[in-house]
Amino acid sequence: MQDYSDIVGEVGDLPPMPIVAVKVLELLQDPDTSVKKLAETISLDPAVSARMLKIANSAMYGLSRQVTTLQNALVILGERTVRSLVLASSMSSVNKSYGLLEKMLWEESIGCALAARFFSIKLQKVNADEAFMVGLFSNLGKIVRNNNDAERYQDLVEAVYNGAGEYLVLEQEVFSNPYHLVGAAVLDSWKIASLLVEAVHHQMDFNTADVDSDVANLSALVNLSAAACSRLGIGQREPDDDRDVAASAGAVFFNLSEGRVDDLLEEFEEVFDLNRESFIS
Image (tube, rainbow, N blue to C red):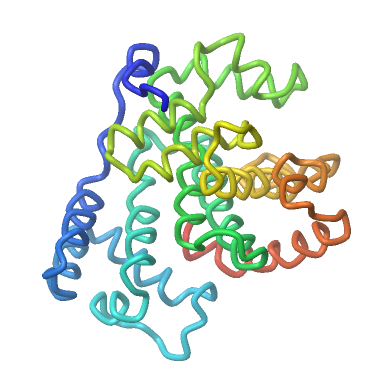
């Protein structure tokens, strides 16, 4: 397994996990934690509390009645979902600033999380909440790069937008390590489960013998999700109509036909439009 401590020297300061997320994850490890205590902890951050309620009432969960309290939301959603939603609600605080580029990075992260959850349910390959979290974390390395070396990172983004080359190719010319390895290093420093760390790390190279099958499935799902977001313009300046999602490594890994991919993209676009406001606005 990769020694992620080696990455810290190249990246610089790694961001701490958002404090409310830290406290909630600690509480969830205690079997005696009450729903009331969880709700009290989450309520320490009004922004996270408000977004949690908004997400719980979103079309993604299709609840028949309006959720009006955090305690009710926690009971209805369950532990796994609460963990992923708290992380999603607090992750935007990792950004040191919040301009157009940061907004696009956040939208891409949320889009990938929602896509991964959607594809996991449709393909029945991995746990939906784990897929959501890996999708959410998939761009963490880009966020850290933008925080720590904004000028070089933004020049890289502009070069990609202006047609100078593919992101991963140009990134190698500018930085020592790819963004997905940086993201994995941050997650490792946060003590996130190794399955999720490795899935973020291998989102571009999951189809090899030394990658565990569970990691490969999650990584392939995120790879497919990222391709879908690029095609639909989620977190991008505009849709990439030339992006062949069926030819992505993730789609090939799951043996998806072009027709199946087109159907899934059409359905996911509707899902994202229904849930976008709950997560991003």
